[in-house]
Length: 384
Image (cartoon, rainbow, N blue to C red; front, side):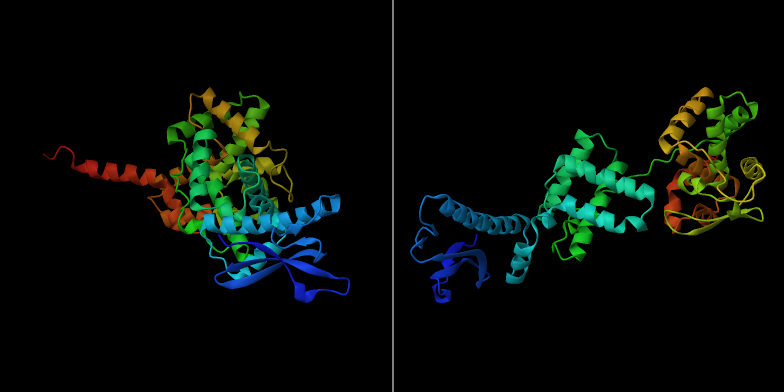
């Protein structure tokens, strides 16, 4: 590590006999002088010990300032060595002049989140805030230079082993860290990219859907009108999403004016893609129920929170012996599964109806393709 010396610039001595102090070091054979913001006389300066002479409070305070300057320089050099960052004279000066909190990842990330909040959906804001809080509980003072491939691997293990997070949750959390680290790179705060080495793990999506038999059980339960009012309301909304393939966040904000000529016209909040969903007979009946004679405004009113909704729909499903982890998203998956099976496997149209930006996203319904492949090959059974 570069040697750090404190020097008095005798050639800059002022009329009062004081001359400024500088910390001096060499990086890549370039001399760097860092002002200490102190000026001392030649009699009070101990050039050999590189400190102020005396034992009084003033001497103590000045020596503390000198010590803090050396510590700050040492911290920059150590972080660069540990992270493998190549320091230049310009990058060192930029790091030294930066306010202390600018190097702290969590503080930077939260400032960036605040500056972009208006462009993010509420659900995205909540997710990012939760991910940053989780990191803060693990390492509250983590520095940008300490975000290394080794740290990322260790943090992923912490999420899995200590917090019991699923692979999908771990991936989402690491993706949030990557978003804000890339923002720091664009701001010039860091140069090396640990995500070139550490690849965010892929997680196989868990697709929970109902079979046609299970779906019919819920339809029969709904038609029986035997459920408590709150459960009937939740089941009704779930069925609407199952008949339209809408995500709960899109359905919540659906306006009556967006239902035109037997179709729902909306823009997906997540992908910003436009979707035109034709209304099936059952979906049209539910729309008329919710409109209740109204011509404008929110189609749905007084809906429970997502968490409360998911708790109730699980309870409803258990009433008819459906023990799957059914949630609001399972309605969308059920729509996709049944649509694909009942319409000859048209992935292209299904992708458009779901508002996916790529057919590759729609391929999460590969479980259906597997069933079709097995059924097709079974035609050869019994030939030998």
